[in-house]
Image 1 (cartoon, one colour):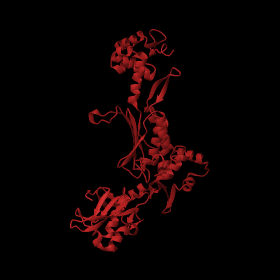
Image 2 (cartoon, rainbow, N blue to C red):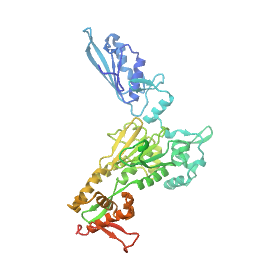
Image 3 (cartoon, rainbow, N blue to C red):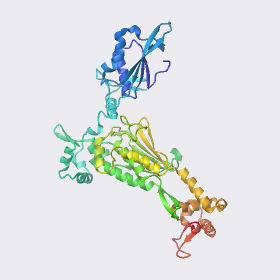
Image 4 (cartoon, rainbow, N blue to C red):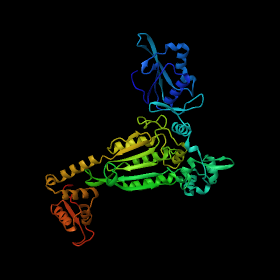
Length: 473
């Protein structure tokens, strides 16, 4: 009882009116739940018994009688001894968070717990809460100003072919309720704009994906800014998925490893292809499009890729149960993209992300929730890969590895990673002249570590490879 009030705990005097108690209960239920202790006034034990049985019963039944719909909570009555030595009781109301409804008072007011206060929500906040709870679907809202001229016929034709639908665009969109009549005119829903218009951002500015590639493992700012590549993707969601996926694949690396069974080099992707692609697709399908000030962001670092999707987890989905729990914030969008083959049913996609990361001997994916976003993090274990590569190279060249210069080791590592190396390419990486670079590579050739591949002594296309013939016998 000495605890301070917080986001999850509130103290109320026994003098509180039942209508004010209902507001507090609704605030907790519309947020993340919490506990209300009744019978504490000015940080002192007051008790509730002096209020009489009728008022005490009103406290206990408030969540059923004064909240619409009723709040889910448990009651607890605790015996206490007041400062005057008399016994009394404190009532604890343990309030569960609502899953898919927004609670309101008899006067149709909506409250939520913000910080350590119960706050009445304005119209925009109330609508936002209804979207986040799933009791109102933003994708069903009608958009002003969109016409059939804004549609992307290529995407619509692909969708018609998938459904084997022979009617017109208008008939298709009406049949699937992507357009509805309002005031004697047809209006498009948010879902229709996202899926089928050429430029969804003309109507929903945040409906885009932004990609950032950083050099290193942390983002730097100012003069140290280390962004090496950035790109923005827009368009109807099917094309948004296709174009972002195609570009990101060009930014991923492959690691080269020696297969002990075959004696041949094999390429290992930086991440399981399905894992990162499904992470991006899930963000596009399930983000909160009613949040207009933010877009999907993909950050690629040397050791990880992060996918930031606007909006918190919806309803009963948590970081703990995400593998086994499915609930779509945008069910119509998800349905169309499922029919087009982009989205997996029954949460298969998230389960496979975990499975594929495990099969690649990488850490489990990390899902976390901030105040505004759901973030997926996939780690590529680059430090372990680098360590294993160095150990492998050291074992291949035994005691000679330690006798090599840093420049010679770098040349070997590059050839090991990409299978070949040209003199000019290595010169640029070292920042040294061609003559000095050529001496390094020739020294390694003389030590039978590298082999020069050339059609003649002056072949401009000559290159070096690792000389593994002896070691692979």
